[in-house]
Length: 252
Image 1: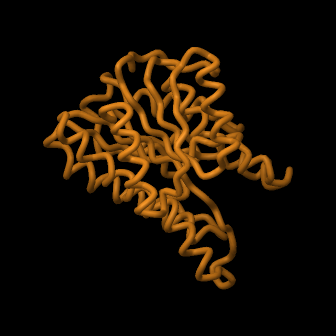
Image 2 (image 1 turned 30 degrees about the horizontal axis):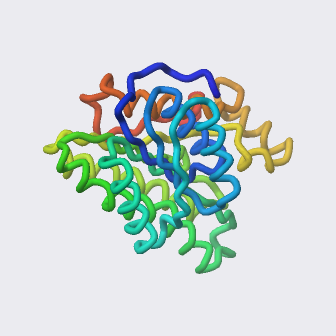
């Protein structure tokens, strides 16, 4: 397990979407390391089970749920299972996301639709599915994983940038709607982070990315997980509707 911020999440239940690898996997591990029970959602059964097994073998408690967050029926079904098992959900992290990069003039309809469906519609569906439980308990933390691409344009990512900008607008609106039930809603916007997604970039692209980043390097998944831990903790109880870039200064 990583070098995580220490916060008290005992007696808390967290839901993490896209927990099969990278940032989502590390966030799930971070929650478990701080005492939370973790419901891990994803579409790759083998990878998801690896995440859950690693957490349980390290003394945490995690359960796997196969779920495509873009499909309303799957989200509602799994939300029902999670609430039946754990009784409540205190923290929701909407991390599931995909890319289908292509220049705008060559971008296919399905590649636009698929990215919007997972990244933006999925965030809406899971938030809707769990927020009523949080409203009843009059407390909750929702953290949406956006991207620096939601704060600035990036050639070849019209679909991804639009989806992540939409997540930010959704975050701010949900924060206003849910504040009267003591539910905070915030977003984290990662920059270039060392994951499977960035590992496939060639050396030239990687160097350009590092040159654009004032700190001159890629971040680690633990950097994002620690930001999420803070926003999920009681120490962030007066923060809502905000976007926290974790980008090494890229958006400065």
